[in-house]
Image (cartoon, rainbow, N blue to C red; front, side, top):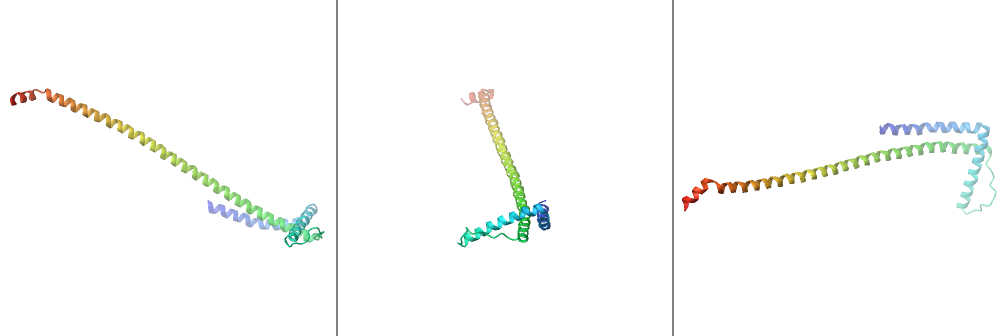
Length: 168
């Protein structure tokens, strides 16, 4: 089951690449979506440029020229494609972690049940030992009473009386 699952996630990641490419193409063709991704790409470009300027110690209060529309569409489409691939890979990792956690939880539950069964068996054996000890003690008492009774009977036997009188 596990190899098939891993193979399925790999296939899903592989399939996501052509889907991402198709999204890139379609993103440039639809007018409303094109306007949206151009504004998104321009905001991303300004953000990256400001970060780079800060890293290199340059002034950040300057006006940043916007990218031309074709570059913005290409950058946004590329970002969208990478986002699709990253999302699919992230979901595959989350699924794998959850599956592993469920598997580990089942194993832990099984271990708990085995420990509980061992405890119950230990308790049952302890009760059985106590019962056997009680029976043994009862039998020892019976043996002692019987030996006392045998001793008393032996002393009262007529053969013993005859033996005693013959000796004296």
